[in-house]
Image (spheres, rainbow, N blue to C red):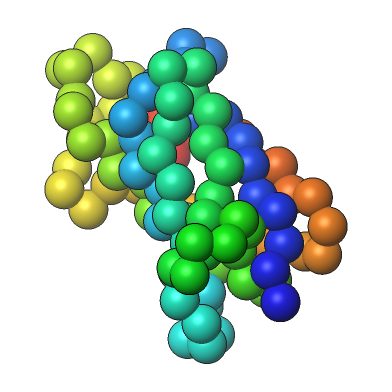
Length: 101
């Protein structure tokens, strides 16, 4: 079952465009969901089959800055940044600031 997931990616409060987010279910069941931030740093996840959302449950979130400017508050790496979150039924909003990683 899928739940809606959206949010915003910033760095020191400034929106970041072009950041790729990958939500990977920790259970190993189901495919990851993915999104890319718009010019306002906003994203809406899509599941592997094209439906909106992500599987419910614990997820590892991977953020990758695809075109670093060199002005990011933390060094960017090919592996990106990661955090664990819990997707629940209904609407989910997860905002990420690179300075908090």
